[in-house]
Image (cartoon, rainbow, N blue to C red; front, side, top):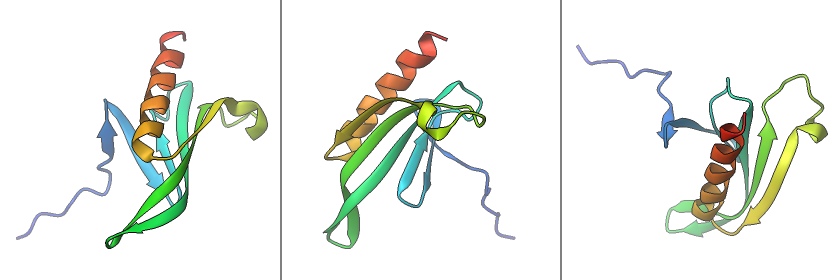
Length: 99
Protein backbone atom coordinates (compact mmCIF):
# COMPACT_ATOMS: atom_id res chain seq x y z
CA UNK A 1 0.00 0.00 0.00
CA UNK A 2 1.33 3.45 -0.89
CA UNK A 3 2.20 5.87 1.89
CA UNK A 4 0.12 9.01 2.23
CA UNK A 5 1.99 12.31 2.28
CA UNK A 6 1.53 14.41 5.40
CA UNK A 7 -0.57 17.52 4.73
CA UNK A 8 0.97 19.29 7.74
CA UNK A 9 4.53 19.23 6.39
CA UNK A 10 5.88 22.79 6.17
CA UNK A 11 8.85 24.11 4.23
CA UNK A 12 11.45 25.18 6.80
CA UNK A 13 14.20 27.77 6.29
CA UNK A 14 16.79 28.29 9.03
CA UNK A 15 14.54 26.52 11.53
CA UNK A 16 11.39 28.56 10.88
CA UNK A 17 8.37 27.83 8.66
CA UNK A 18 8.14 29.44 5.23
CA UNK A 19 4.54 29.39 3.95
CA UNK A 20 3.20 30.70 0.65
CA UNK A 21 -0.39 31.82 0.26
CA UNK A 22 -1.12 33.29 -3.17
CA UNK A 23 1.28 36.21 -3.77
CA UNK A 24 2.30 36.32 -0.10
CA UNK A 25 5.03 34.40 1.70
CA UNK A 26 5.08 34.32 5.50
CA UNK A 27 8.25 33.50 7.44
CA UNK A 28 8.46 32.79 11.15
CA UNK A 29 6.79 30.82 13.92
CA UNK A 30 3.13 31.72 14.43
CA UNK A 31 3.69 31.76 18.20
CA UNK A 32 6.56 34.31 18.09
CA UNK A 33 6.08 38.03 18.71
CA UNK A 34 7.28 38.98 15.21
CA UNK A 35 6.84 37.56 11.70
CA UNK A 36 8.05 38.58 8.23
CA UNK A 37 5.82 38.78 5.17
CA UNK A 38 6.89 39.03 1.54
CA UNK A 39 4.54 40.43 -1.11
CA UNK A 40 5.45 39.14 -4.58
CA UNK A 41 4.63 41.22 -7.68
CA UNK A 42 5.69 41.96 -11.30
CA UNK A 43 5.94 38.32 -12.33
CA UNK A 44 8.13 37.49 -15.34
CA UNK A 45 8.32 34.26 -17.33
CA UNK A 46 11.57 32.33 -16.98
CA UNK A 47 11.06 29.31 -19.22
CA UNK A 48 7.93 27.61 -17.86
CA UNK A 49 8.24 29.21 -14.42
CA UNK A 50 6.95 32.59 -13.27
CA UNK A 51 9.45 34.51 -11.16
CA UNK A 52 8.66 37.55 -9.00
CA UNK A 53 10.39 40.65 -10.33
CA UNK A 54 9.62 42.76 -7.25
CA UNK A 55 9.31 41.81 -3.57
CA UNK A 56 8.11 43.92 -0.65
CA UNK A 57 9.50 42.81 2.75
CA UNK A 58 7.65 43.64 5.97
CA UNK A 59 8.62 42.93 9.57
CA UNK A 60 5.38 42.85 11.57
CA UNK A 61 4.24 42.31 15.12
CA UNK A 62 2.37 39.02 15.27
CA UNK A 63 -0.64 40.17 17.32
CA UNK A 64 -4.12 39.56 15.93
CA UNK A 65 -5.60 42.30 18.13
CA UNK A 66 -3.46 45.11 16.69
CA UNK A 67 -4.68 47.32 13.88
CA UNK A 68 -2.86 46.22 10.66
CA UNK A 69 -1.35 49.72 10.32
CA UNK A 70 0.19 49.42 13.80
CA UNK A 71 1.68 45.97 13.15
CA UNK A 72 4.28 47.19 10.65
CA UNK A 73 7.77 47.66 12.14
CA UNK A 74 10.01 47.84 9.03
CA UNK A 75 9.47 47.71 5.28
CA UNK A 76 11.83 47.38 2.30
CA UNK A 77 11.63 46.70 -1.44
CA UNK A 78 13.89 44.29 -3.35
CA UNK A 79 14.14 43.12 -6.96
CA UNK A 80 14.60 39.41 -6.21
CA UNK A 81 13.26 36.97 -3.65
CA UNK A 82 16.66 35.84 -2.34
CA UNK A 83 17.82 39.34 -1.42
CA UNK A 84 14.40 40.01 0.17
CA UNK A 85 14.69 36.77 2.13
CA UNK A 86 18.15 37.79 3.41
CA UNK A 87 16.76 41.10 4.70
CA UNK A 88 13.68 39.47 6.25
CA UNK A 89 15.66 36.75 8.02
CA UNK A 90 18.09 39.31 9.46
CA UNK A 91 15.27 41.59 10.69
CA UNK A 92 13.37 38.70 12.26
CA UNK A 93 16.40 37.27 14.06
CA UNK A 94 17.33 40.74 15.33
CA UNK A 95 13.80 41.52 16.54
CA UNK A 96 13.43 38.15 18.28
CA UNK A 97 16.80 38.53 20.01
CA UNK A 98 15.53 41.69 21.77
CA UNK A 99 12.32 40.11 23.11
